[in-house]
Length: 408
Ligand code: ZN
Image 1: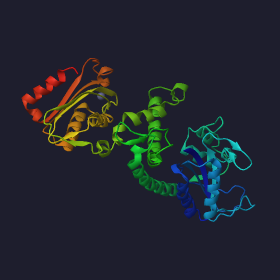
Image 2 (image 1 turned 90 degrees about the horizontal axis):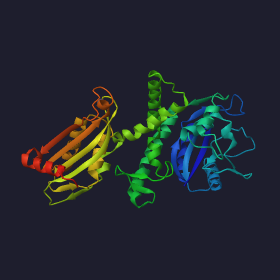
Image 3 (image 1 turned 30 degrees about the vertical axis):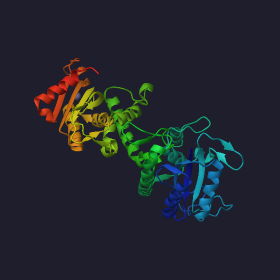
Image 4 (image 1 turned 60 degrees about the vertical axis):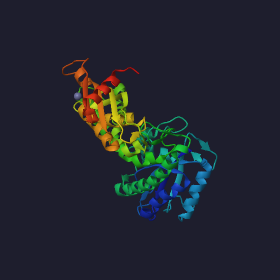
């Protein structure tokens, strides 16, 4: 798969033609992301020339640059575009391949990167929205830097939120269908593996496979990141730091990304996580999974607490795949938590899932908020436990304690 970036423009029946073009592009590859739609004045046109809708699409494609360029011309023709000598004539649709992976070409037929991206603010903005860190070949700048440079270039561009939203919605729906298909065949497709959450994710760099994950979530993630970054800058300023000094320049971005991982539990779908991994069993004795390491953030201070969870249950006809229990712990740990609540949530979740004869969750945690601040007791551990069903019987609890004390 190659990453192609395509500019779209229309100023004849643009409300119909712009979205139509985006839909047709799906026939040429997989949509990775679509930019907002901008209204721009026609270059070189007079005051009566209708304004354009402009934007960009990131497409992962198996086509070569020339084949893709020809395919785009074909789509233009199908949509009724007639190329004339008049460069500034209104057009039904304009589909320009402007960037293609790390490729540079200038063979009289095709020029990549397309020079127009260095001149037109909307082009740079739309592309930067798709992939800000993309380094324009051969050696930069990045799209974000380019967009920054072209800020304030003459030529008005106005974002059209309603049209953008409409296209995003369509992409989301169409991509969901694509995603279901991808998940069904995911295990047999090279490049996919079962990730720690139990759902298929692409092995390759983001954007190269399973665009569904990116397109559907790209806008929400970007909006959330931007908001977190602003908040981190505010914190930096208010603790007396200079967010513009070199060491801190990228800190807001790094923090936003770190939260993706530290708080990933909010985005885990429990059904996908369990993925039907139940097994019938005649085994009626205790199952104990101990020393499950976890890292969490306390909801009072957003400081880390970490330690080990031990989960035991006595099956009633059903057991759960071995790897699932640590994943369940992870799902609840990767949120803002109180250790007490986390213990109970894990127990309740397993209770609802397995209806076992008994369930016990024991967690020991070290809390940075009491180690680094407040009472400053670095050695203190917190132990919490929840026992349901058979584990409320003394004999069973003693058996559990024996198991916990045994060293594997
Ligand atoms: Zn705390």
